[in-house]
Image (cartoon, rainbow, N blue to C red; front, side):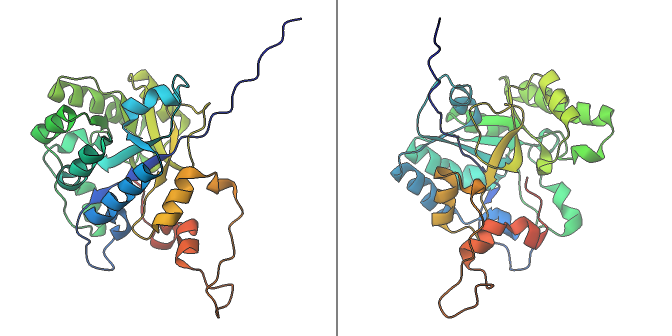
Length: 281
């Protein structure tokens, strides 16, 4: 009788989701929680390195996600393609030998985050083709984020398919290089959108489902951990290193206060999205 050797348990892989690394807008500004001061981004990256993590783009992370390689790695993604990430995140990534993926809205190269204007978000510049080519030259990855940053669930199938497929072809034509990764805008998708991404030739796609990626995860619906402005560094590191999502939410309280008063860490655990109504990508 042939005995099969049990497969070694593989640790889940964290994939972090960032947006802008820039000076903070005024308090009360919509989506303020998705802007991270450059110094805080640098501190987080150095803390990850100190813990033995190597930050990788989705393309570089692929062999680990497929189980072909093992190591202490973390995926780094920056949604929307902001120039601020070129100016502030890129130097830190290069200093540490990390790579990252910028998910780009192909219909707004050199434009701005026009999809945020209806809710009063400040205008922010997006990378143009020159920025993106230099981003790639330094070893970073460009991924697709649809043509116009639409909520795919609000689109009819014809438009959804076009937004997904053409975002890839637009970028490949502009950069003269393959585009393998996709990100669902706002983290919102249905099963048919996953199949559209697969049909468009994408090898990986990320969501805003809050968890670490398991070894058997569908590569076209990979979860990520969104990094919020209010997220303390110890909490971020705990989420990165540990199976935090499966733990019961602790009833944390400061000394002398009721157990019903949440601390900063408890607020982070609950998530800013519910508190501020902010989309995730």
